[in-house]
Image 1 (cartoon, rainbow, N blue to C red):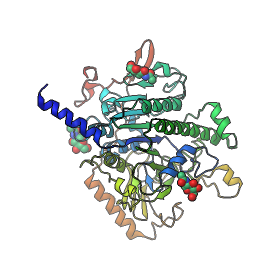
Image 2: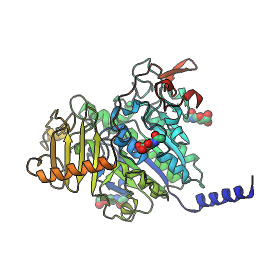
Image 3: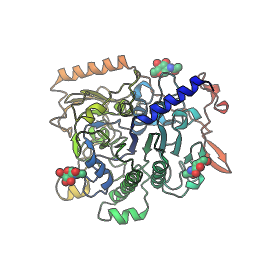
Image 4: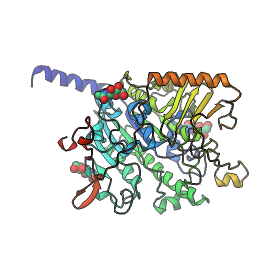
Length: 505
Ligand SMILES: *[C@@H]1O[C@H](CO)[C@@H](O)[C@H](O)[C@H]1NC(C)=O
Ligand SMILES: *[C@@H]1O[C@H](CO)[C@@H](O)[C@H](O)[C@H]1NC(C)=O
Ligand SMILES: *[C@@H]1O[C@H](CO)[C@@H](O)[C@H](O)[C@H]1NC(C)=O
């Protein structure tokens, strides 16, 4: 070792330890709807998430994409998913998804560069055909969770059917001991471990990606009995209990941070990857009331995410920050929180200074999503108060209201199915009409045209990389100790010139 190296090491050590960089925990629920939290529906049991809301801020104009994998892609790259072929929900199985690309790296890798220890818990869903596209390949130091988007059961951790491959990991090894333990509780336990084992001289980042309350709709009975027995609608009672299990994990995390004396220097974000699934084909018990639509629609119910931020340095707390923030903004925002800067390949805007000072958001316009996949074929764009939808808004287009509110005569349940094509337009004034009840497209043609021009300009600047349907593979599984597990090595180099051989990795 030369003296230069020693000096550099010392300097790096000082740089990392001297600033009180906040720990950052980004907790993302899967399919939690706008009305699925206690502060919106008093029947729900999420007191600890509510505590964060009171000690921090509620963000009521926080937007995500209408499906899970695209939101995760936007969050972890700060880039529009349509520029990476990641705009569609099915993208997760695509073998070339986010192939390692020297042009951009992911959030954990960037935070590592800022001195953070990086941990991932729960659902990845951003590719798994090669070690380099798994969480450890993307810059996480540790990974406890699942590579796929959902399982047959929250206890078996297997995909598809009882004989499906096992998918719960401890870093690169299948964690067979996790079998029969409830998915959410595995995440909750691991989160407490991370806090307890954290070192005072190194900040940490945790991407706490709950699989809940996504289906299958399973939960240990004691959560139902303790928190949700008063909920009469059967699917919502289970949903309430799945949310309560998540909330218990957030609570245990808060308690562990306090016990360790680092709660005040920890930034915590809680949000959802898309709105709650609604409609006849989704008996999830989730609601986005009073918003329209849900998961897989570009209506507000699919895209406006219940979001809470508690962080050191907030000048105002226990309040609602109404600035517009989009999924692509989180990466530059979190990098600024961590003392870094946005990179030129990111499409998002740093919102941290505005959130911290309770200022006016720099974001005035926003792309909701651009999905060219034939099942969706939709796009939506926000310009100030105006929202233009182009194409098929989504699968379930009505207003879905919890049964207790219908019974009480508070609101009407108005389910609508939809099948418009890409030439269809809808225009809403969200300031006056946040429930998207009055389509003004026919009346305000000049605004429709103005926003169409904005979408075209954005696509010129950030071109579409078409979504490619997954290649089927017969080799997604392998065997470890006689157990069938998910394989992380099934890209076939012979099928693609730019795919490295993963056995050589
Ligand atoms: C937040 O505001 C509510 C309503 O004013 C109040 O009841 C509650 O005690 C406040 N919470 C905190 C932590 O200040
Ligand atoms: C990486 O991605 C960017 C943005 O999509 C693209 O312009 C570039 O060609 C890619 N580089 C490689 C080596 O694939
Ligand atoms: C994960 O693996 C590491 C290293 O082998 C081990 O120390 C640790 O206890 C394991 N964690 C779990 C939750 O099994």
